[in-house]
Length: 510
Image (cartoon, rainbow, N blue to C red):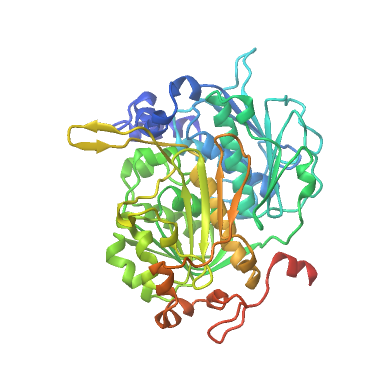
């Protein structure tokens, strides 16, 4: 954006946010509840460097876009160092932007028109993140800096006291690239707020196909080459919930070619606090109070070959209709009125979901009817009283007369990291019956860095009413209609269908 365009944007929103201080007071409220003296931390200068030799690589561009977008949603002094003439990859062109720098700057300014992009004064060291393989090395880096990249299905990070060397140069999935960008943004945040070095990210390789994590100075050499789909056919997909995780997922889906039919569902409008943790929503969306479904529909319609429709409303008014519609999969990200507990009783097809925890955690899950657990299995009790956190951290309750209020806080990068895992699970389903051998629950806590990825493969829960409902004959005429219905037996064949093996390993064998 030009200087004039930035000033015009500020004038347009001035009735609500006349100053930067007014804007940040609203946007950063939730994060400020979790991080003491937030202002002292968010004003630390940050630099995101893009590998000049790989700046036109699609994977590097996706990582850079995610990292810069998420970082400017908490940091107020951010500078991106990238070749100004690097052309955007064709799958990433949007709103007339032709170069990587143009799109990065456009997204950062519409997320925060007040941030400072000027270089640091002499003698002041910025927090630095390096994006890309940097085969020639990172000459400006020191041991405090961090590097992120992605190859095939694997997200990569390296603490630069032990520089990593890339063994492969394959393109990465959008999910792996987005995960690398989100983890890179989280490391900048951890350093900015003063986490001790032992809690920073270590050198890692995280394979999003099988959920394996390697922590070692040579972790990058562990990458397994797998085919990366250039196009993803989502079939008939329901995205229920376009909040923090859902909007992040829509943003990531717009980074690749998509085919199929997507239905968006949500009841809310964008507000100022959403700008702190969603890479999709802009300051104008919040100023105008745009519906979340409208923003996501506009974004996806402009970015892909996808047919997109939207429904605004509350879950209890539409759940039955969703159950009668022949979707191939649901992505369930809404829990109003304990919706997750009611999902199994609508006899859905395969269900995917993402979560963030009361702190630094995030995760994702898959529910293949009859052979895996259901969304009700993962609910605390009582179900109706539970509302899943949305990149929030709970703080001690404050008693206000007869009402107990639980303040919440928000970390900006968790929702996008969760969305990346959900997107990886969408791609895993295209592996056919091989998906049955993969974990269906992955959880991570970034509070102490990235010590482990906790994965489980959960089957139906004995005594669960939701799992029992999925075993009913009614499910065969409803949930089994989708193209993943054949996954609902361990053999991968059900309801008279066949389920081909399209796993990356099978494609390599061919």
